Length: 112
Length: 116
Image (cartoon, rainbow over all chains, first blue to last red):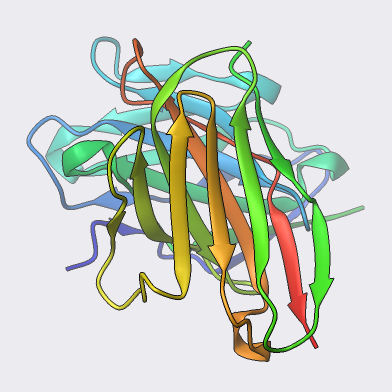
């Protein structure tokens, strides 16, 4: 069963506009969640993580995410995107034995 | 802190040969490292979990005799692709979990393997 679902394969957004990437999980009563960004040919960079506590999490590069247990969601947001935000974004959840299960990813294209 | 390196970053090898990829945690000790494979425009698929001093645990469908993993020290894990074939061409990414840390994994920059 899919542990993480990212419903949007591709999102195009104008520079300066807001961005929201959806992530739904189906594992664990207390999930440990991550958002990563990957530029072409590069490794993963951690944007932010949620383990416990405040459900609104601030990350790097102006990103934030909100954990909503009732909706099993951990959506990523940025108020104003920059051209450099064009990349692939992955949501992930920790499974047993510290393994990570990744969503399929969302490609973000930023138009001028 | 928490830097993971991979070497080489790119490698091209001929079909039938073996190639070794190194994954190092530079500033922390990693009792557990993970190896992922990523096809173009796809997500990361976990191949195996590498534990220092013990045998690696492979995910279902991953051939352990083809993808040899060695985790001989707390800072180094190696993945050897044996008798490589063109279908093994992929982007291989490792990650490491800090021995004293939480659930976070630190990712290497990846290795692009091309088998001709």
